[in-house]
Image (cartoon, rainbow, N blue to C red):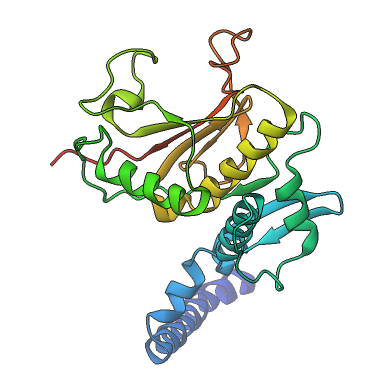
Length: 255
């Protein structure tokens, strides 16, 4: 055995001991600071999750928002659009509010994106008197509280059994269509105000998909980016979701 080999054999126990000491120190720190430290690191906007959950594309560039800020901004814009009193948004960049109010320019698609939040411990629900599951009914009531009366479809007392794709969540009472007809730039702007609000509140409302204007957003996307929606008939405004926003909630697991 050479001198170098001897040194290598001696170094291994030393390195192992040093590693154990370091692990012990880290464990002591976690005990002293409590479980809140790890929870903070793994939280929605914690460093291990990559910072703020939402972004808005503005004329000045991309601006990051915490989810609570995105919820506040989209709610304020929705209320102002219908002339209602809006919450204080003085802490939010005015460029964000302006873009959300104006809607995406041209054919740019969504302006606001948020990382998905798909709960894995939800239970399966059955439709109630309105034809919606309790989760979907809760979403409808939340929307009504912000947007007031809307042109709605995709559900009915007793349920719907036709008019949608074979595996549509409408048949389960989990989906709502909100119409913005006819297809105009103004109606497109109003549709995006709602679509952005839905994405910002997706975690609170257990939203699964939002589809509008040839784009779709999924709660199961860790990046939370909108994607192109491939309609079965590109010439059909309804199937492309140009005249309505589709939103559905998570189905949950059967007991």
